[in-house]
Amino acid sequence: MELDLKNDTLILVAHGSEANSGSSAAVRFQAEELRRRGVFAEVLLGFRLEKPTIQEVIGESRGIRVFVVPFFVSEGLLTEEVIPREMGLLENGAVCRRQSRGNQTIYYSRPLGTHPQMTELLLTQASEVVARHPFPRVPKPSETALFIAGHGTMKNENSRKSIELQVNIIRAKGIYREVHGVFLEEEPTVAACYDMSQCRNFVVVPFFMGNGLHVVEDIPVMLGEAERVVQSRLKSEQPTWRNPTEKKGRLVWYADSVGNGPELTRIILENVRDVLSLV
Image (cartoon, rainbow, N blue to C red; front, side):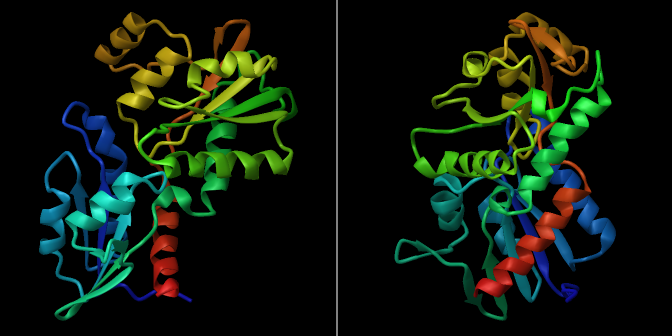
């Protein structure tokens, strides 16, 4: 059934960055795409580290229903505590998914990265990067190790759960010879991938919502690209990883993050549908 959202507000809440404008490019793209489609009365953005802030944007909304969708990969400190607190959506220490405020109703969805349809998006990213760069040939998935790279953090155990869930789902499909999760701040790290598999072909998909510093700098360096090379490419506005690159006897394809493109636009709308069905 088609949702009627013409009188409603969508708020996409993202981390943002004071150091890297690319961090918020994906969420801004999604907001513009949804505005272009005219699905909602208004589409607003709120950031943790940019303007407008999370606190500011909730007061600006004018819709009868306000749907707050975290532009994040997983549940964690930000989505379970910080954002609900700053938006006034914590009640007795628990996240409130539906809250009435005067003539408005606020709905708070789960992070985009936890949606079941993210599996197909990750698989699309993996297959498309190899298809776009078929050198010396397109390897068969049965000859390839797929790595899902996430942030991870010791501050909240839920941070890695989305990555581990996707690894288990994709592994069970039997498409790739191997499927592993690797992390920036937890074990196994991204750099450990070369010890985790003997496959000749690696495909690494960053499970991040945007192309921030972690995606364009940290992961390429952890995969073995020299930091000076990465910085030089950044300055000349080139991709910081060239597909495929041979490292430690492996051919490594490095995909884009999952935040761009129409597939994610559809998942945003599905998140809105899901939060309505839960409350």
